[in-house]
Image (cartoon, rainbow, N blue to C red; front, side, top):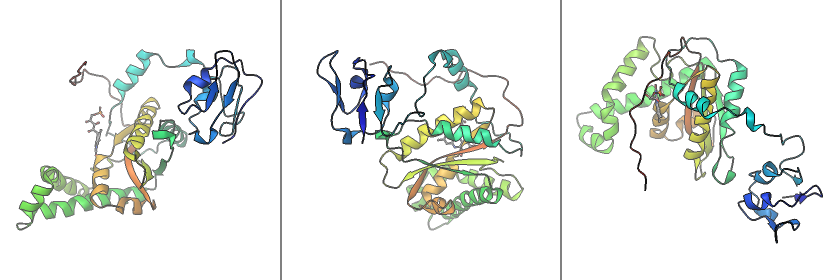
Length: 284
Ligand SMILES: Cc1cc2nc3c(=O)[nH]c(=O)nc-3n(C[C@H](O)[C@H](O)[C@H](O)COP(=O)(O)O)c2cc1C
């Protein structure tokens, strides 16, 4: 990795303090900063982001890709709190498509999320084709239907219920969803016009964590843009039960889908926020 310190360096040592791998060194405050072991660099960009003198010439962050940060323009804590309270899984959707620019900003926000070791191995698949969306719903309902039949089979029932206690609890829901779909309603995607699949390589160690952090960024950006978003747990569960099938449907060879977010334009907005039941918080 090519990392160079130019003569604009004011020797403040900030880059030395923020680098997670001690690639930048400074013997004493005020002494020149030197680059050691640049091969260890994970490309987190902390050095270029912290430098007040634009003195770091880093191969991964060429001129034009680093922008001054106007901290005064950041949303206030009140604004952030309002956004996280206002974010709801609004399932009342219209058939209006989500504007392309909104989709672009939602995916871009997801892609700003941190990833373990800055691996940045995530991929995004945005499905808007109605036939493909139907295929996702039908795949999910198909898995649930097969599970329901197993759970109801007189010989298999005791074993399956023991092995899949969670699925047994959902048996009435599986039947209801099948009925709803037969009546022309989509109980899985709920009329979403776009679905964002977030995936990672099969061998990625933090695939689930990385994907869900990205998903939450996408979710908050969607809310800020007035786009409804619903986390698609049912699709994920079906994908887990029939390993590789969801990925095959999406053409994702060698990858694993770890987060799914349905997106759509709301028929109306929620007028109120409310106090949620507080979860226990322990101070140690
Ligand atoms: C892991 C997870 C899985 C979920 N799966 C589904 C789902 O499959 N279908 C659905 O309609 N909502 C799903 N949801 C949405 C939750 O039901 C919803 O977040 C919860 O009821 C709280 O409502 P809110 O998001 O409006 O605050 C899921 C949420 C999470 C966090």
